[in-house]
Length: 170
Image 1 (tube, rainbow, N blue to C red):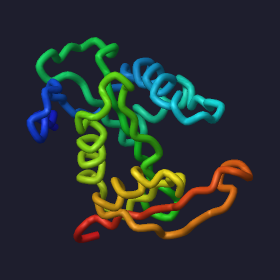
Image 2 (image 1 turned 30 degrees about the horizontal axis):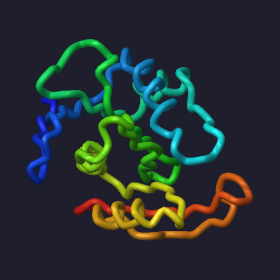
Image 3 (image 1 turned 180 degrees about the horizontal axis):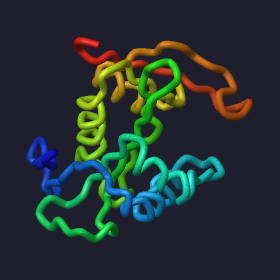
Image 4 (image 1 turned 90 degrees about the vertical axis):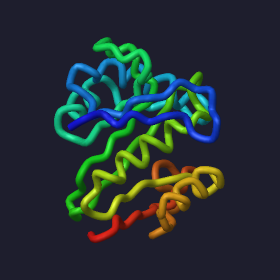
């Protein structure tokens, strides 16, 4: 599979990125990104940890974003990542999509989302805080719709909308 070279959109001055399947050796860099990508939420961070990223890199669909103009084999250049895995209901679950805080706003998250959805051969689920209107609108722009609202999804005060995307032809 050839990496997807994605150029900046809308006149952005950000460097182009390359979206590729993660190698097993990327797991430490992805775990490090995971620790910094979620600090803005105000909730205590619950890291997935290096162990689960190691498993996901080998057995799930994990895509990484790197600078396309400066590709290296060094895993430290991971600037974004997403993980999607199959469910027992024969659907996919898009568990995370994250971009390094210093690289946000350049369309990297959207490119990761599109690359993940392009690989889906069955409906894709994700969860989102219903108060996060910007995220809800972003996911809807990709074709996601709310399937269900769940009160106390994670903790009593953490409600979530379960959203679903149905790929064409599935």
